[in-house]
Length: 299
Image (cartoon, rainbow, N blue to C red; front, side, top):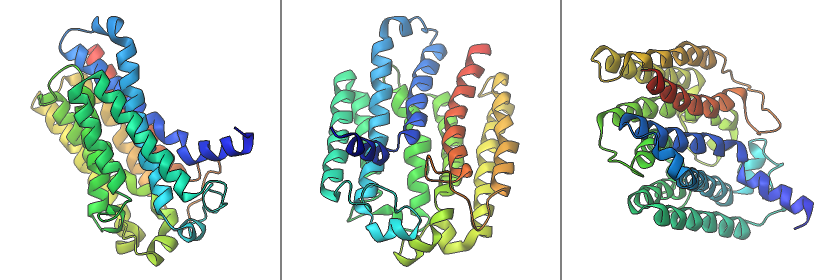
């Protein structure tokens, strides 16, 4: 494949966004083994664990590609994303759709081969990923619902889906941690929307910053951040979680600091085409899983 075309497809995939789901799956499976006192299974099943993490990342990739394929090129141009492959006509929408759905099929097939229950979970995640952008649902245009949709698909469900690979996902620890992540992701996923207010407003994409303005959107983020760490604190007080999970509370003040730094004219980082706050969302999401895993190791 020509080097320029390959670079265009890599840009379409948005590799930076794939790190968090990959880490989330690895950490969740390791946590499930630790909780059940069977960490030795990692030695025998490391290939399956890596394959599951890859399937999770591919499901995210599917959503990223289809999202770009379904958005009008004019929307990307208004939002300062004219460098993307589709607005530059380096990748056609039809080819992007084919790549997106092919990626989803590979993710689903891999997941089902690994484990049927895990395959069901990936099916659910693919539904969320695809219909966030695709009609007739196109959830991204529906105010409040769009934030909750991503909170469920990128916050609440990934740990439970990963946990289901070896054990029942209906255990108290993964459910509590998934609730924490639901609140945190629901708040912080809107960091992607602050730089896109102009185009989103013109094309009827009713994100929280578009509908309620920057100040109210930041207040919403503070509330979600508070609910996330309030849930974690209550789980510690009631001893649902081991005391070692107190280390995860360090992300609360960091999150507050990041929210306060959001302003009306955010500067985008050229490499990942978004703001430092958006980068913090993905890095912070992965960091949650790492901290949760360490907390279980030292409990």
